Length: 591
Image (cartoon, rainbow, N blue to C red):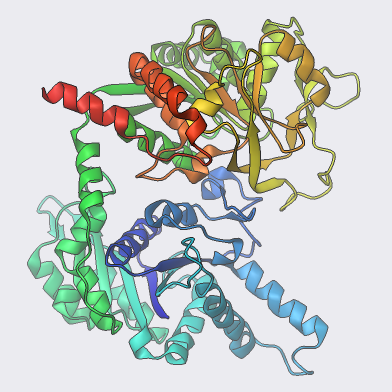
């Protein structure tokens, strides 16, 4: 097993996640199996209880792990399936050591940071690195390790010490350290400053680690003189100082790194057979993203719109779908609370602007969330999309809002609500707390991870939109994260009023997908699960693809469903090939 550790210097948010994902993409394109581990130096056991404003979205894995959003980058770029153990936190490491001490595993010794905690971290890395993640059943050839935070942070020191020891445990030919740093440009003269990178390398050396490769982030291409200066002062070969400047889309990053021979550099450092990566699919993808011109405006109506990372996977899934549909994505961010009537009284400008952008959008998306703030605004957005036949996609809470809106405005249940927002048996709750969930605990107590959803046809036997989008009459595996569900006792009345529950759990009791008939609404679709977590750059999520295609090219969407209907019986698993419509559109334009 070969190991590549990636650290960051100067400031957070430099793009270590994209850098390490791009490194993995190069190695995978060279024919090597790759896995990835993220180290987060916070004391939380996992990201599950952290606010989206604090740390961005919580990414959910197949096994139910609630992890850092960077693991989503790894899965999307590398097409792998990770586990909760691929995210190491300080909380997990210390908890493991304390449990061992309580069991008496240390035989009465004084338990210390060194060697007990650092040994536990090294053991964890080595164990998880050998877990197969690509579906082949074989362990990876190379394990990528990202150390969160910034070099010099006190909370990450134990992990740097563990890596210092780890390089000797596995041997120098099996360990490589890549340091990502910022090269700022100050003043009107545009001088590129190397001092921050020098200090970062100095911090690493003081921890007993010396970078083999330095990746320099900057707004513009790095000057050769800047790279030579960094090499001279950071004890690195000039050829191993690489530049990653701002690009039009992130899919250029693997290509940019390869133009500087990073794959060859890493293969030589690790004693691997030198192979040239085949990056044709990345070149095609980067070009597709750059070439699209026809815009599609999607109104994203959420409550965490102040930090786009709160909806990172949703954004990525929309972009994947836009590439597949051959259009340019424009997200119109709308704070759900700004759509509510009380906002008109206090901030009329926010109210008018939000409604104006909602009404101008080609499609409306209501994502997941927790708490009652902004829920009434989300329900109003759903109502607008339904009544005006604007393509609508709801996710998790978005499905629950769709159910409440339908109950209020079609069933006539004007007080329809969710048990999440009310207390008391007399509330008219159409969404209820799941009985198996422990309400006294927060962390790790939701319905989490990959679960099967059975897909149902319409009452007249015609295939549902869900079956057509997923290309199967059977079931699909998607990831979940919720505590509340549609009240099963309310389903019959909703169905009688025209709402279609086309996806249910294996017992047929838990509602997973809601849709309207196509002659009622061109695209009205909502899921209790989170399809965004399984979307990839080369294979868009089916619900997102259908949504964006319906919003950008309604005729192509209808044609796509008709073709899906013709071949529906042939598919037993999810068909991930969604580029045929976009390719046909490009061909017609070229002619």
